[in-house]
Length: 337
Ligand code: ADP
Ligand code: MG
Image (tube, rainbow, N blue to C red; front, side, top):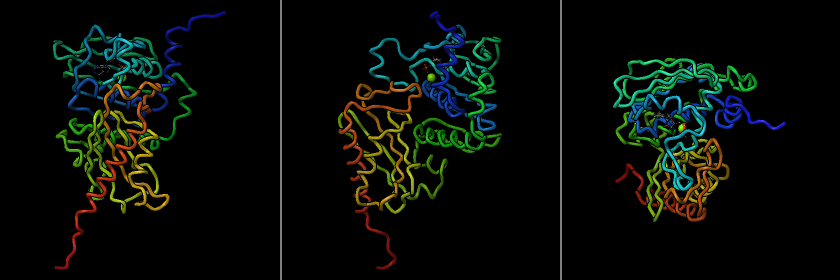
């Protein structure tokens, strides 16, 4: 007999694709904060995010009467028609994150718009509305996620150690801090502030804040522009290369992605400058006209597809080559004469 699944079961299934570990929750919540126009974002995790994740922003907030709606699947304020899917300008658009997160954890939402006199707190446990009350709070939104996967034992077992899970989150927030230099981003792990960026719009100073002065010193700044696309990046001088691709960070229109074409572009940009098995550091912030990239490939939105692969690859590779050449043109500092 064919039946339509209950909302609860359907949400749990969808959650499996969106929320596979603490990192995916942090990612979705931070992306929501960015979409909300926040100038300040604080991310706090405990025990690798397994027991506690908090993301606080000072963005637009959610109107009280829409708070329940925000937790329904396919509920979004970011797109409305199927044409909008062809030119996505926000990080979210699927309307699945909050419903998925709420299905597999205990969530508290505390939010206030600038117009509202008072804030609202809404608690949802395992996808069921639990409690709603008025509360005093600043403009913006806080979401607290506790007891991840408490009601999905298979997933609970699948999580790795606290330190593995927290490392992934720290790496992700570090990348976000580089990409969003106009936003003050603070990361707290088990009660300790790991870093806090100043939001003053200086990517390079964020690289030093988030990574280190040593990392910063090995980098060259590159920029390039062409019709429909532009690139800003920090890439390593060839002598600062690494043994793996971990230090290759790609953003497309503000979205952290992994992408074969960009991998290849970096490789090509450094052709003959690196030994076999060495990889440059490359923090690339690529922008392209939204119509020329498809971001709706997978529920986790980590992949994108360019309509004109080769143009993108050539542009990025060329910008890297030009950057490396101009770097070489600077005469090395010597102590003689
Ligand atoms: P999506 O981001 O794809 O729209 P989500 O499930 O992540 O879907 O969020 C649902 C809706 O809730 C969003 O479209 C937005 O209107 C609202 N929302 C979620 N988080 C925030 C936030 N931090 N600030 C303001 N509004 C938010
Ligand atoms: Mg979202």
